[in-house]
Image (cartoon, rainbow, N blue to C red; front, side, top):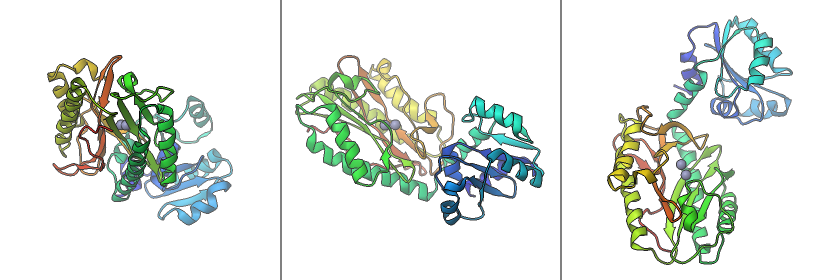
Length: 354
Ligand code: ZN
Ligand code: ZN
């Protein structure tokens, strides 16, 4: 079943439509990226509405049965379709329509607005990746890996976090990434105890950890990986914390089984870190879904009871952060595949001393 068919199955009857206006979900349903427009889905039709800037390119690229229609004023053109198709109510994306847009829709749109359920449904449909989506995520990951392997040559005492971050971004773009997947986290020394530290002027020193949380985007799809490496040497405490995080990562990995919940994966990592006495130093969730957005459903956290199914892509990224000392995080994306998840990264996870 295609994503559009799944959305059509969600519609209760022929007089109800779904109006998708967020950029990410328009792209998801149509395969076409644009800065404005809408996708309207009824029981029988799916229509991509675009303005003159995009119409021609989309007419050539968008695959039937999706129709491409050029609009002049979106709401007026939508209203014509609503009248023609006898649409009485329309779902809108409750999680992305602004209050201003909602007022505009309420005032000008003919059908009754349904503001509950469409965002959730699209997020659910996006949980399961097609082979083509998985391929794009893997390509994004390979681009990151190539850049990462090369940037390790720059990682020496005296170099700044900023230099490493800038080099990585440059290499990611050079090797085919359309952009970086998020502000790259390239941090060292005591900064590594900040899970979302920002690269700055801090200089790499012998005996410090360096944390890379990095990713790229390929044809709209994101990748996400974290490695923590030691520069020159590592103390026993650094090695011990590293091993604890790696074991937590591996325990979570073994829980990535179709039929388990996302919570099972989080609990596997969290229990291990807690049993080693570091529970209070692991303050974030174990992971998240990845796809057209860097963070998407499911949340890999103890309160998320989404059942894992084949072809979901989630991260496994436990960490331990000792304030003012150092932190360790290890992250890979996994494709759910029965009871043998596929690790989408090809970079070793044992402690590397550069
Ligand atoms: Zn990450
Ligand atoms: Zn992540």
